[in-house]
Image (cartoon, rainbow over all chains, first blue to last red; front, side, top):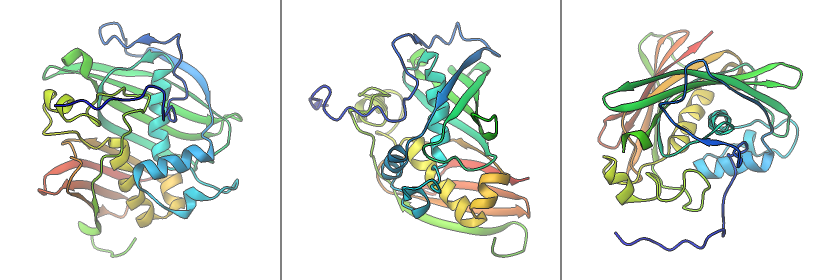
Length: 160
Length: 124
């Protein structure tokens, strides 16, 4: 199949990857351990990012489009935060998203300062697929819980 | 929530699929299963697939529409598995069935009526 040439840097879209940095290490399924603590990192979802996620998902609702403090973050931003949280420690390769388990304690407000924390909760091999599970907790800077997100993925690099 | 009987379908909506993952997105780098048909086929898919992060917002919206913001963002535990991929063409149908006053079964079917996402929402 013919590949389309990409002009490097043009339109590069880093939204949703708040915690990746040059210091992260490639995710190595063999070395990752259950109960391993993931870094505790600050996270702020800006309103323009919330709107971009609406556009990206083809979801439109006024609750997400208000440019005020009464705005509401799309629930899927918790999924992006979870993934970004894992990326604060590991450079993740190709994956398949398998399972989401989450609960909000209140809605997240775009622009508010929060903290993400959590750990690797399981890793296992099943039918030659390499699974990783982790948990991300989001709370306000006053330690008020906002959401908890449990995420399961298959690491495709190991399977390929 | 409308209706009162148990095991009742309380929500059904069909949406068109789409492939909206930019090849210039930072992660995952192109080529990937959302941007490159050949890459996806090498990994067992028929073609490039929709990202879960583009499908599940529609399931979340269905729950908010059904339950209201107050209940969804304060009292609802949501859990689902992606059991089959969603291609970029055709449509998906979101179906919610009330099993009890506090338990909802969640399903997303693809255009062939094959289950793509299955889960449960529990109101606590």
